Image (cartoon, rainbow, N blue to C red; front, side, top):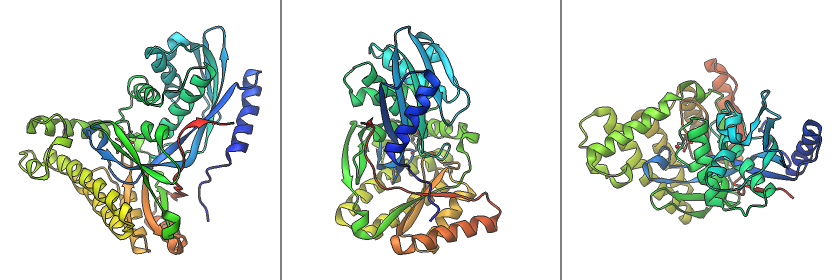
Length: 386
Ligand code: GLA
């Protein structure tokens, strides 16, 4: 089965350590890994103080770090060609992919942590640009490794906040915080229910194996980076809806009140958010009752809501969703920010081959680029690698 491999942590770490020694002339002091994520349900709800239910992937970014005593920061990646180098004080000026890595060190220092200069090298298996939070995995892996190298006690909530600041203030990419939170707090075998109103979270067990089911992620390889502005526009519409309704956020609006909004587009955006938060609650209840058919049904409704009301799908995502369900998935939906990226299907193990083949065939027939598939086996949070 042609799944994108998550890789073996021991050999990925050994490879990274060798490359680090070659690049910087010293061995790394520490290596940390942080997972990418796929969201089960609850899309574009995090920045509306809503609920989300993501899962950490086995696919992760690994960061090797060694402290320096001259205040210099050097950041490189085995996946990217342009390393960045500058003084620690200039870290907020890093651009491109390095902004995520250097930016998190800037944000940790802004938060009062005393960090030394460092050499940093990263390497990972989270597909880039697939809507699976390779950027959050990069930020969190660098943060965890940097805290250990600086002998600073790891405060996971502070790291989440620093990673969000790096992404919004240094990389300039708006984020609602779901990706960084799940990368730092997820537990194996579970999804993480996060409430962005009171900022609490709790694990929700996912007994996929017992139910004979798999979570199939299909990367359409349509890059969502091409239409970055769409995310900000959706946020602005949601803020306009909340302002028109006189509530601090759409979390405090109801299905009935949003239907009274005058502007058709703003009303549809708000309807998606309010119904999506309800669907997160329903999926959690269905998971706790072992009712996988209901989970699949909520996936289907979520996709329609994102396609028609929030307007963040695309033909490739719609094709994965339609084809997967026809070939035997219990439900499927686009996942992540949208405008490309990945779809998630809940598939009986006995139908997994057939679903993958059906999607590949449908993409070829439509003249789309061949998609890539991976299995989302719910994995653990960011941590140091021994
Ligand atoms: C991106 C953002 C998240 C979240 C999702 C949509 O992944 O980084 O904060 O808003 O889109 O649910």
